Amino acid sequence: MLILECPYCGVKGEETEFHAGGEAHLKRFGPGSSDADFETYLFMRENPKGVHLERWRHANGCGKWFHAARCTMTLEVFGTYSAQTYEPPQEIKDILTAKRPGWSWRNFK
Amino acid sequence: MSEARSALAGARFAGIAHVEEAGLVGMISFRGDLGHAKVKSAVKAVAGAAIPKPRGVALAGATGVAWMSPDELLILVPHAEADAVVAKLSTALKGQHFMAENVSDARAVFTVTGPHAREVIGKLAPVDMSRFAEGEIRRTRLAQVAAALWISAPDSITVVCFRSGAQYMFDLLSAAAQEGSAVGVY
Image 1 (cartoon, chains in turn orange, yellow):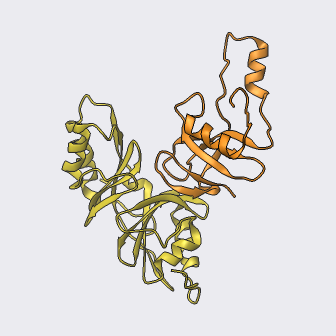
Image 2 (cartoon, helix red, strand yellow):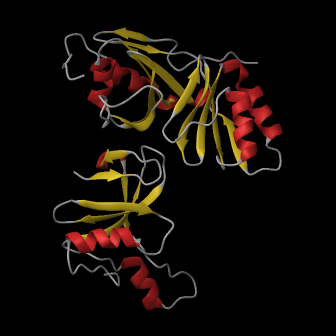
Image 3 (tube, chains in turn blue, brown):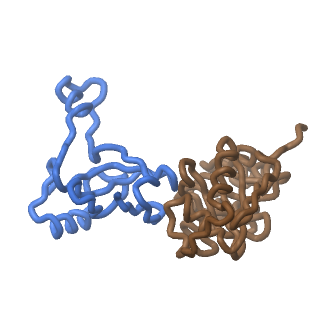
């Protein structure tokens, strides 16, 4: 079970209080984009063993969306951060580097 | 005007704790920029208390204000005054971006009272009730439905949920408060 801390209301709760929202930091390709870009945006997802960045929503709480960095193998949650960002903040990257040296996820490392 | 009725007409259950539907409670859902000076003063004027810090609730009798999310408050007033309070907020914040809605009749309120009140909630919600203090509000789930709860008096916990789930919530709390079901954790 994941223990997540909502960065908006500060509640540290277990997984059932939250709702998973899929992969984080997707770049949207909508009308007018190429078929290949659109297909990538819609269907192509990471499926890592280890570090993963995801979107979560504090569904049974303050209702806000946020990002979480966690390990898919150990279920360790490295940290949560604001949804208003295109990439994980430096402190999250530092934690990841400390705990999973050499980690990479999409184009972040 | 039609006669307002609460969801379960004061249904009650007595076991290791007393579960009671609290009747009509005036509730206003307020959304807006909580850091704005005008919002702060308007809320204080109707709720009788300043906007609490995150996850806080400030209550004096039937009137008060609870922090629901970074941009949302729950203002509690006597049921009959809710519409007037919404009007007051709307006048005070005219021209401002905000929302104040009377949601009194969309919600149900329960009180769980007794020395085992924390235990009853602890059985249903993923919350560490031993650390849950007075003046704190927690939005969470009770079994399968969303709820908000706070400690209204020593040994008394108020639970707010959607009216549509009122019967479910009452059954849930009653089952968790069954005679002889004390665990003795808190």
